[in-house]
Length: 139
Image (cartoon, rainbow, N blue to C red):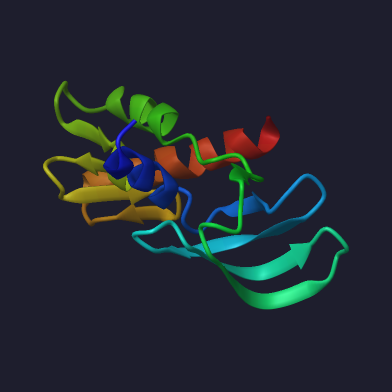
């Protein structure tokens, strides 16, 4: 894996709840807000292994061993597959590195926070998105 691929993957964790392990017994859990080119991290709303709260911390890349996702990532590929059932082939494009779904050449954009776009097609996508979220909560 190249450094560029590594940084792309790390970038996909932005806004997610992550656990950053400093060593065997020490860690921080918080929302990943930023990553530098050198893989330094910024976390907000952070707790350590002793449940001490920190509003924001910055962790140098030499100080942590690994990072894990604490919440399930939103299943964008599955949502893309579901949306693709109502549009003709080639009109739904899941762009993995941006974690978005582009529909009708960008006229409608879907991310894990919702649907951007207007018109009857966007309304249909919003209904699919809303039902998908309900289905996720019931699992």
